[in-house]
Image (tube, rainbow, N blue to C red; front, top):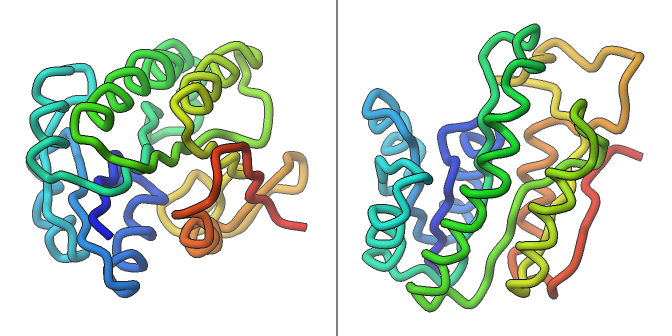
Length: 194
């Protein structure tokens, strides 16, 4: 399967690319940064440098790759978890505008399948941005993957999950479980630890 993975250089994207390649898929992986092209190439993806807010460039990149499936793993979060509250508007924007642009690009490319990252908890600013994001995906006939809060390599909680928050999922386990839903019917799936 040809898979266009938006957010391939993120915490779960870095875990997901090698699994998709090992499963025999061809993967184009996006990043906003030229500095991450080499890393994506080493993981096995065809790197695509594009800004999700540049709708025309995004559409052209997706159409050029001609994917069967588009996977949306985009977030706009800081490196420092203490700064998360100040990024709520930026992350809501990527869920609203970024999702709309990615769906439009997938439609233009004739991609038959669409999977999108969501969360299995209520964001600090309230549920509205999550609900708008998920409605777009479901209205398009896509699959919403509600992940628990990530812990493990490349996450805010690299050494394990703190006790006070839930639900959780280890990031490599989340990537492995994502593979089970590449051809799932439209709907919402929760990927959390028991």
